[in-house]
Image (tube, rainbow, N blue to C red):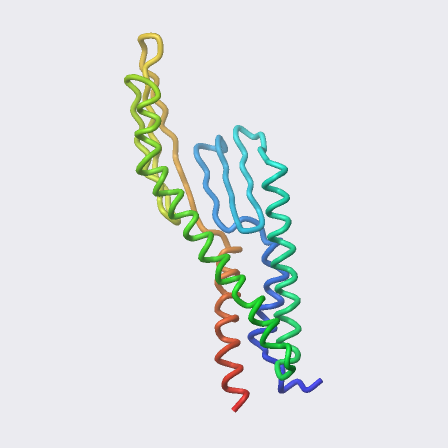
Length: 195
């Protein structure tokens, strides 16, 4: 093996692709002091309500398939990094190197759309369910803190609920961004070395 021919940024991206599926959630949200906790990544979805975890076997199987696909893509990226001049290297790299990018884009779009739905549609939906109900939700779009306010009338008395809300991107998300950077860097490195 010729060490000078190895595409080092691609190799780093491939190794990070082995770590990412086990790094935990990329985005988390917490409402109240542990009343509702939520975390997502392309490989993991965690929801805890009042200390009780919720899960779906169907979602778990889908996420397992995503995890396996990402790991296979990582193997392909490592193989193409170790043998960049082989005829099959661009094909393996082409399959695997885009997965981190689309994973990061997918999480960002999902979180943005989810926050938009919660901010725009959910208060009206909650208010229309009960006469005299009022909901004010101001969920930060990617990261930050705010307060959720719910008010409704029940049997002649008004019930008001105010809860702190905190959302944020985790270190695993930033590791995925670094993986995307290494993937892009591998293309630049490949062009420089092939000259």
